[in-house]
Length: 493
Image (tube, rainbow, N blue to C red; front, side, top):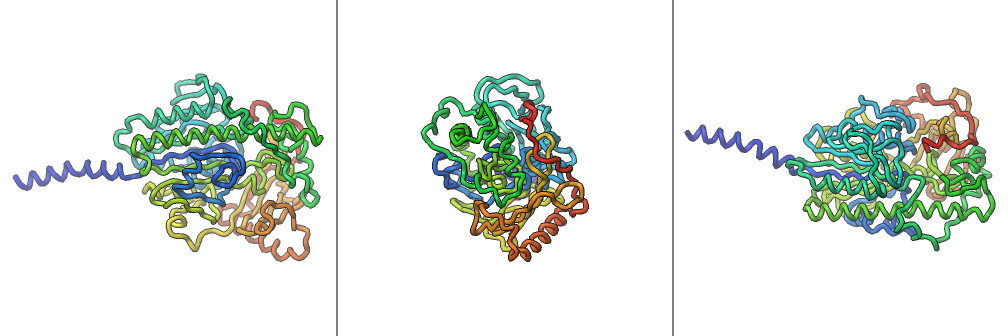
């Protein structure tokens, strides 16, 4: 009888132990913004924007002050965040390609390890597909970019239907409703994909005039292009230049008159206004987690998919290897990582997946190019990277940026523009001293004294590419057909 009771006790205890282990795993709240600049937060030093709820994540967690995307374009970057792979490895090289099913991603791994998973918001891998994707128990998205007001949502594949209201509010309402559900004791992972602050930068009414009295001039680097490659000057009057339509904020274009800076100012005001609504959303999520007593058992990640040029070097949009295009915010709140930490080392979008999986104790992704920053944050990592490479392929739909291959060290950056047909580069390369010239005002590529450094950086670029499975001889890319003047198709803007 004693043996029978002991055996019964063991059998009963196993499910309890399993439940306790599952409950001990942290939840994950992953908040992804679209095109948010690294400094578009007050915790990052923005002089005008006030983002108290997002700042709270930095005050109670970790802020990565040198966080970068490996391709500054929405779909490739989102795929890299999920998979831990560069664009040439996961296969999403443009904004029209689905994430191939062969690529496992971190939410999938969490689902396999017992997490309940959800994605709601802008997915943006597969322009015309709003159906559920693998790895998520709940999935709500829309086709393409979505709209700031009255987007057509497809919730769990039940068909597209307009949900009236402001995008940021709608996606936050969805998230709060899902969080309030009974998750049957499972840990959960919730991903929120904001549209904001992607163009066309439409704030909700309460923030439409918040910055009316704030003057926003063109940055001085917009007028210092003499030592830059010619394609940057050619871009000035296009869809991605400061004298172009500015995502429809300028109605008559091109316009290089000094007074036309008012259109640029209005565009930036709109961009800032959309971020204020995101900050409200973060505040609402904080409140829900506090009320449900889940805050300190939740890894909260706030980040962007890529940066945004706000007039730097005469450009708007992204895609280039310049700092404003590459740098993104990354804030992580989880008590196990510490409070008010600022990490100066260079972290990348491909590092997100392995880091989250380590924090959650889930099975790692195999053969990826990212590296977990958990050790770096907790105790430091003497072997952490000091350089990495950037890739972008010319797009015929948006022909305003050449092919780009670049290497960024902690202190130096070298950028070149392969033509795509194996011929020598036809655009001037760029070399920047990031320590003494962080705004990249002076291109040093023509200075004879820099030739040894340039050769070293070229060799290092090739080495970094080889390490990621992309030796130059197998680096296929489109042929650069030059800077286009026509506007992109209205359906894909």
